[in-house]
Image (cartoon, rainbow, N blue to C red; front, side):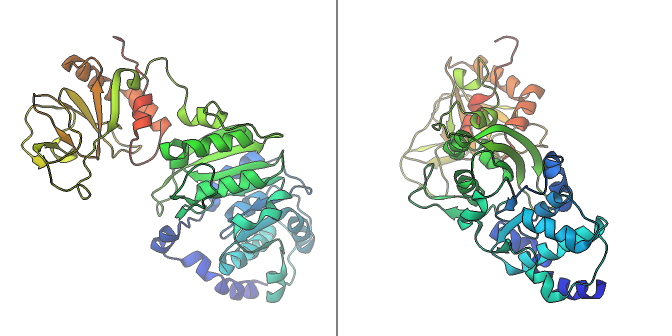
Length: 408
């Protein structure tokens, strides 16, 4: 059996040897056994021989294998596989991934103590007939008869159809997968999904979060952090259950509340006008009047700048100091998530779009200094680390920072 398994495994080598650059291009990131086991642990004790677990983007089977460990096991290999065949469903567009999933399920059954028996190569390909090649976005029948959906969908950017309810243009395909999944499953079906953090915290996905929350109840969100050393993407785990009756999408829905994390009574947005710098260097022509030009390179962290030596012609909006700029590039693990610079002086300033601009309602230098103190505080770092793991701060996140200064 071992020799036959090795031969069959050679046919599946592609599934495990795609270069990281190719996986990133296609948005394919293998879940990994440790992450899959950690994520699926919440299903322990909830799965039985009547459960139907579907992964509409199964890849090489990490999540299905992790779930199989919680399914009933028999003494004989064939008896165990027969039980698992009734419980496990999956789809992937790559034949190699499907073959790898089936082989690994057989090996998992053996590893869990099932008596070994001879299995021919052609028999392995016929095992698990409900795990097959296909597009998970069209596997509606599988989704409808599921009791559980577990998935780590692809993270590639795709164009949505004109019928999309929550956006237009190009979006992360993981959002499309969850839209289709939560629309297609029956009430009571449980969902467990590993998703890129931008869906939890990005302003672009506000309506998506409201839509998903209108379909799911018992929602919980758990941040995981960076997906793996090959995938520099922060992820979170969404768990929920399909509602008996879908509610109207609303900004007060539970998923949106959790994504926004408890609105404070007083926030930065209550005291400052917040927006992204309007100058896009490679898009805007150098036309119009010349202004002092502010960029991340000439905005030293935590300092006050009175004179800006760099100038640029610009015909759009410019701003009179005093104000504060925050570098948009930011990630968990940075010493400070919101790195600020105070801008003073009397001349109007053009601001690059890699900076977020905060203009105090009070129009005073003191208000700028207060903001600098807030942004440098450990409380703000902790709040932003919990609020978002994306590589860029957003206007909505900065506006929502709680005003926690004692002087407030």
